[in-house]
Length: 334
Ligand SMILES: Nc1nc2c(ncn2[C@@H]2O[C@H](COP(=O)(O)OP(=O)(O)OP(=O)(O)O)[C@@H](O)[C@H]2O)c(=O)[nH]1
Ligand SMILES: [Mg+2]
Image 1: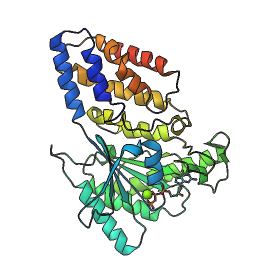
Image 2 (image 1 turned 180 degrees about the vertical axis):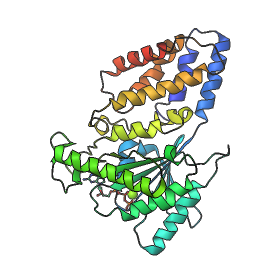
Image 3 (image 1 turned 90 degrees about the vertical axis):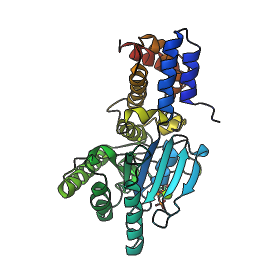
Image 4 (image 1 turned 135 degrees about the vertical axis):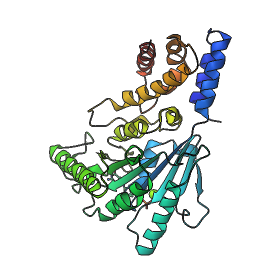
């Protein structure tokens, strides 16, 4: 159905390699297992915080199938299905008492849903805060009283807090519009915001969370959307997704390079994201078989490596070098 599909690429690469039939069989079984994995990502936050903008910037939305819940409690939760990646876009709090109760119930019921393997349906909850808002009271209420108490023991691993609209957090001041990044005063302001959110959550729930800040950007008539730290956000999302599920992001993240190019550069987030996909492939390929370093040549240098090399905005022309670094990364495991 889609132009590129990481699982098809893996199958083709294995098929056209000259490894023995027995090893091929094992690899096919492992690929089949990966193909079955689904990610369920919940995205929530107050009205206007930037949920839709974030989803549009990050994911390949033109292939999404859109649905809504059927029971009254989850009716306002929008469901976007992108193959194995399922996004749940849920309103947060702050829309009035009646609505808040309804939204809380909807979120709580989603968080308590169990999948066919008996695990919680929702793998990860991304809570978006509006960095420009002075009153985050309803957001704390959402995080501390609705979400964390319904995530069970491992809440810390299934929650991400991201402060959006970094560009207008100080009403547009101290933002370097030309280079699309915060100037030192704004960096300080945003770092303080991160710290205060962290403290508020810790005090109320005892849970340690490392919030990040970013900007989903906005669409102007004459300018395209230009996010900041979107690659960092995806990096945190991928890192917090169970390993064997991660490949579902490969087919479904935006192929638009502009979305990924600007970040704080504390890490090469694009490279880190790609490495974590490679990790998944290496780990699952090893399962049940004595598969040597040739897996690097087979997948790393094949269509699979190319597909991974395109994720999170690797520049056209550098794809080849990404492939070979992915290849040597594969090989370095043996
Ligand atoms: N300057 C700036 N504007 C943003 C950013 N993110 C979102 N916006 C703007 O904020 C407004 C609301 O964004 P949405 O993405 O619709 O927010 P939402 O959370 O989906 O809102 P609801 O679906 O109504 O709850 C829009 O006008 C966006 O263009 C950002 O990072 N920077
Ligand atoms: Mg929206």
